Image (cartoon, one colour):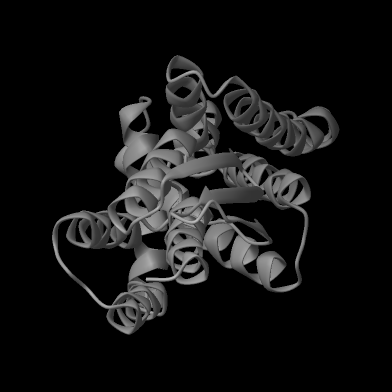
Length: 254
């Protein structure tokens, strides 16, 4: 393969990994191994949560640099798994340039789980956490409704390209407001269990885990950036919950 083709394949694989929840060190290592397996002499890779810079040196001493900006990130570990498998095949099998790009496109364009399953899963998680934190079955049913509403709200605001901080503020506000309203109507006496169980669906667990793993792996800048992002999301959730607790609790006497 030419140097341009090698850098293109490595960059596309790195983009899919990073934009679907992979750790920074995994992206770095996968891109490096792919470049070396396809004939590069040396690589220089710099990965941030929102940017990838790739430089490779090929046999004739020519240096090629590519940079890509990540505009949208999500979590789809199925795509990460499939891209990992493709990366191993690229390293150990003789795949052509067109075959690799076709597989990358197939993986990246693969449909997620049906939307109704995503909404139901979100709602069931909120329901089970409400039970876990000491709520009754009736409390968990309220948590189910809150989880259902939060998922719809998050997707609606995401389509409007809303900021993740404000999306989580609104999610926390919905959880606390509905829980307080249920208590006001006499449907529950465990407002805390419902609120905590519902906002667990918003907690950025993967970001926190990846931040720690990146710091342990020596990618301090990426790890700190992901950690700060997780703290901002947590602050957004806390702000959203605090607004109705501060304003409605004294009025409703809950």
